[in-house]
Amino acid sequence: MCQGVAEQFGTPVWLYDRATIEARITELQSFDVVRYAQKANSNLGLLSLMRKHGVVVDAVSAGEIVRALRVGFSPREKVSGIVFTADLFDRDALDLVRIHRIPVNIGSPDMIAQLAEAGIQVPLTVRVNPGFGHGHSRKTNTGGTLSKHGVWHKQLKDTIKVGKEKGLPISGLHMHIGSGSDFHHLSQVCGAMVEAAKLVGSDLHSISAGGGLPIPYRKDQLERIDVAAYFKLWDEARKQIEAEVGHPVALEVEPGRYLVAESGYLIAQLRSIKKVGNRLFYLIDAGFNDLVRPAFYGSWHHISVIPADGRDLGSARVNAIVAGPLCESGDVFTQEEGGFVVHRELPVAKVGDYVVLHDAGAYGAAMSSNYNSRRLAPEVLWSNGKPLLIRERQSFDHLLALDKIPVELS
Ligand code: LLP
Image 1: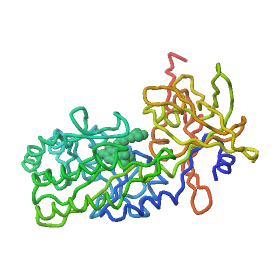
Image 2: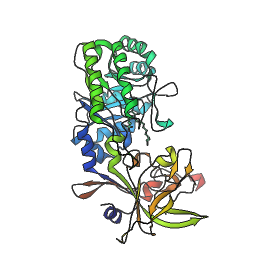
Image 3: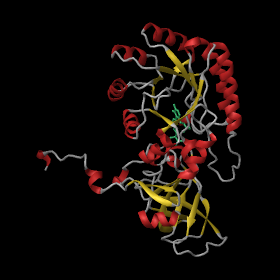
Image 4: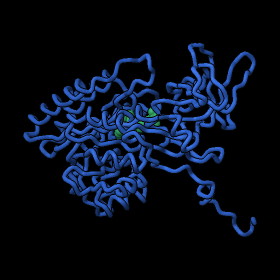
């Protein structure tokens, strides 16, 4: 599938497997609401697929609201198709929330006053910072006093009061302690939620466990998160809360990575093999402008080689550093947090072979940039045995479209 897609669409190219996404959606069906954190990958084709399966979305920016509306998510459904969740409103987002009456999950107390000032009446939930957090990197830990996210748990009571006074009662609670966390840390959130729920009382109609569900990036890491056990913990918390507030409470989950990461491959071509001292470099035509996670977090992505000429790769392995085309030495896919370059045991490859970075469906294309004026790569969805193009390769005209040369400079 990878080689055919590379030959048809060129490299670098993103490939997502529809069946994998659908399998992950099915695994989460015990939750009342699966709300996809579209920041992981907001391609309209993938959002449409989510919608087809009854998954709703969150939006963290005006652009994400526009994307959700474009594929038909409606904020008017009983369970809103879109919830705007953020720690501040910029003007564009506030305008869209007003125009489309989009429910808001507030992450800062000031947002209530801003809604009231703008005369906006929408259902409100609060993202609470429970005082602790955990993520796969310091950059993805969203709890505790060093995090900008959420309403500090000790301010929740006041925030609820202000909401009531301004005619904007809080009807839901949300906790997301970090991304790429683990079962142990995620499960601690349930207790914090039960405590927070007592403060809201009978106005409470929904709770969200947030996202953060990890996936096994390393192929030697066989254990997957036990989704059924995770649901059970949350369901128990929900039942305690229902007993407290005296009516049913909907249980949401808000994963990004879990739904799409494993479906995705970044397929590149090996363009140069060179020795630097005694080190071996495999240079490929994708860079951190495409997949930034290794450079930004020191993240591990499994790497495989596909022989372009169909030869048998055999069992011989070499230690290679896999790097991209960017004019910056940090453009290396085999590095650890802090920028320490490491090698990977890989097959003996030839120029022209394909190199595939795995588990790249989440925070891959979504975090791409035009650095070094490289064009955004196309995205392809493998669906029922065939490739569907869901984003074209950016054209050079599009790359330059927004730049202006003022007359006095021409
Ligand atoms: N909900 C909220 C409020 C979030 O802030 C996030 C992620 C999610 C849900 C989804 O988290 P997930 O299920 O995907 O772990 N760029 C980083 C991840 C940053 C996540 C930011 N917020 C990475 O590449 O690992």
